[in-house]
Structures are given as structure tokens and as C-alpha cells.
Length: 192
Image 1 (tube, rainbow, N blue to C red):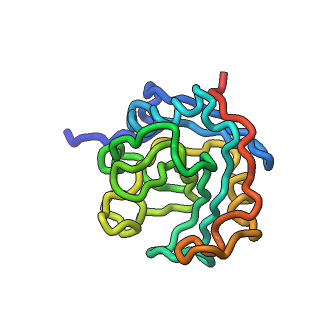
Image 2 (image 1 turned 30 degrees about the vertical axis):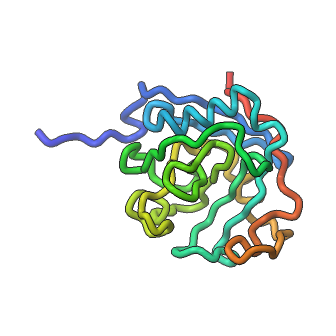
């Protein structure tokens, strides 16, 4: 008998945590996977539980018309508006390890080098972005980004944020991506 691959629907007993992120444009409901991505999801939930997202915002929008990376992606980036995160970086959990792919609505940690990410900066992916998975070419190291959850309600809010055009033209890589008026994250809480 062949091995059956589990889908999210098949694995209803898997532990997930639902989080509500309230922004100035509306609510975004997210499901986080602490069993599949214990380090990344755990770091995100630590930020939620400790109230570290107070004063956070969505501050970067990436569209095909403003992306200088290759291949082109679409996403919004949010998190703290500080240069130095209040926590230490965590080990990188690739999509090869977790099985969580960068599909429409996926939550993923931002990073520069492998192991430099924290929940202080995260992406919400718009559309399917396989170049951000392990083996994808968005990063030269081909390790991809650490996906840890997905939006289940409120992608209309995410898409509205991504379409904001008032952005800074500073910096060659992020030209036109940094919002002049970031969208405030008013609260982030576990759903009761």
C-alpha cells in the first residue's frame, strides 16, 4: 500500500493557534502552526503573548511594479518599526523541514542571512510564491524563507495594504516599497 500524503484537511487533529490582528484597515485572522514550525510559530506567538507588536505596522508593500528582486514576488511586510529586535534571531526552518509552502496568504519570517530572522519582521504572501520556498531562487542561498502560518480571513485587508501607492523612493532595493504612512497594527491577540 502506497504512502498517503497528509493534507491540512486530513490532519484535523494537528494543533493550530488562531490569532486576530487588528489593523487600521480591518482585521486579519491567521492560523499559526506550532507543530509544523515550532521555532518560527513559537517566536511569533511569543511576540503576540508578550505584547511586542504594540506600535507595530505594515510598512512595506511588494508588487510586480516595484520589486527589484528576482524572480518578482508579491507580499506585504509588517512588524516592529525599530532597527533592533527585542529578541535574538532563531534558527531557520525551511519549507523543506516544515512542509508549509509560500501560497496565497502564507505567513513567513523576513530574513537576510539564514538564521537572522525573528518575528519582529514578517511577510504575508500574496499569490503563490514558490521562489520563496526551499530551493527557490529568491535568495541566492536557495534556503527560502521560514513559513509558519496563513491568513484564513482578511486577505481583502492584506490586498488593500499592498495596493497603497504612497511610498518612499529611497534605497535601490526597496524603492517604492516603504509606505510613507505605515498601516498601524492596533492589536494582535490569540482568538478565544
